[in-house]
Length: 389
Ligand code: SAH
Image (cartoon, rainbow, N blue to C red):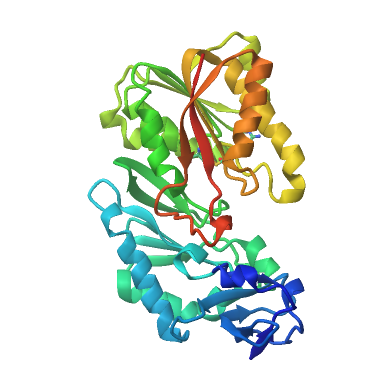
């Protein structure tokens, strides 16, 4: 199959970007498959997987000068992605993202290793078309106990793929992430059973927690909470609106009980964070370490303005609850919220709160979720570690 781009639409591909939207294609073929992609002038730019009727019509597989794509390429790319993570797996850490889609040159394929279980997401028509080769390669390279399909059905829907039915029974997997034991609920309602992308940030935040009063807002299964308790926090107030998440949090605290001082108190709160922070503020509560790790508040660029307001509101209330000199770790996992924008939101919030804020370091997604320079969309988790004066 051949695909010719419309005039002047070849630049991103030439710079290695893996996506071509349907509007950039001169004439749209009507069947899916591997296509040679040409510039409007007739020059071959590489090969991509074409999906009819999808706005994201082509996902590039090779760029000019690279060897041609064959089904064998898949196993080779998975093997290389796994190799790049070797240093991350040891007796303290048995769970990593092995394949991060476009960043590992496998568009729409995500593979997480949770101890001896693999969770795979087939989020593109490309990944679906090669499901068997992918699964065989994973068996061959990792020999996992099981592979659970945790595909993102919204992403599949955009590619015209049928939804994957979630299992009703939750598969619990006991893992170690950053030296902490966790129960990960793979294949349950949640797309991911555990957020691997915060591994490094949990260790950074825990470094400030000894003897402190910690607030973990949007705690999910307690990644930050348990890290802080293990590091000797005096108390951890952990807020989430999901009762299931809080049940996992308690289970995770128990799994690490042997390394948690009996003096460290875990205070789970089932509530809406925005409401609860206001309430605690009017009660005069203060914390020494605060984590704000909300879900995506800006699902797409069109929600950006509303989302910025929500981030500002959240940070404003986080700042109100900060004791003098408190450490604030504030995050966004909305792709549209750049570090620059997050910093601006924080600045406005600090102004409204009447506080000075020192930025200690920017925070990013863990290094098993690499950001590909030619694919800025792979950068999604951003944050700042701050001191609130
Ligand atoms: N910090 C977690 C990950 C957070 S994921 C970790 O390190 O693992 C986001 C969480 O926010 C989910 O558990 C979801 O249940 C919760 N959530 C979403 N909206 C919420 C709200 N308005 N109030 C409280 N919790 C919310």
